[in-house]
Image (cartoon, rainbow, N blue to C red; front, side, top):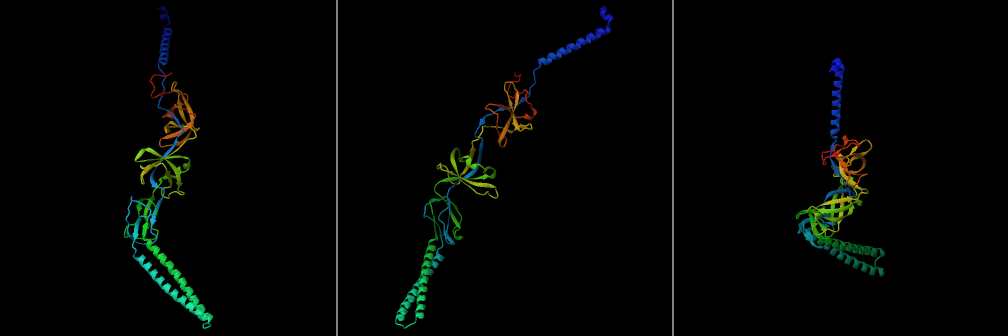
Length: 370
């Protein structure tokens, strides 16, 4: 008590020093007792797959061979006994023209031939008579030559009349349009009463046999299509797939849609695949390296190319892994690099992280994992 009275300033300083020391020790104890705060990140576990290049396109089932049946002569269609969907046989009548004009032409050709026959007989008789007179020196050589030339002309006229009659007879037979193959009618382009020109399509017949799928492929996807494996599924039964073989690629793109018409043969199609059905063409290509499908939000670029954050699930440490992008889908990316099946990567907020920073997985317990 005597010391405190004698040295009041020294005692005050000692008291303040003791209080500050207590506060400092208390802060250290609180710092040591509070756990380390780690950012919580969303993650996913990746899996590697070689078959990453997959795409699909809508198409339609068509016949490999379609025949557009048409008349070889023009005229007015009198009747058309077949319609779309009818199954027909080779030689069956598909349509008939009005034969009246064609029959008149044939009758006219017959009359021309009869006249040519009479003229030829008369000219031949005159030639023989003048030949006999020439042998007796009754007529001159020039007079006989005229009769000989007339006979030759008559014979040529008869030949021409014969051929005209054959042509008119054939054209009369062309008034009936018959099928050239077995198949099914897929389209009719003319009705009874309509006047058609020679070669104008009247009925389209799908030949009985192999089926194909017709697909329009965008120009950006036409490259390398020959190396891809193709399968076809029907919209009526999506669970069944048929193996398809590329048969034909259009040499030029459609000027309006900028797509190429591509045909795939369906050699294994059964009765459930019918003409006109809507189908889906599935194309796949085995990748040369194993790739992982990850969200595009998992990638970022630090100036040295794209990469991802890999997380050690035990320590929570981050490691930056550079990756190579094979292709993009609508929201995901297919990448490969120093990746392994089961790796855990960060899928969001990747720009806010630094390598070596410990993090906590969103599905991990809230306490610190050491």
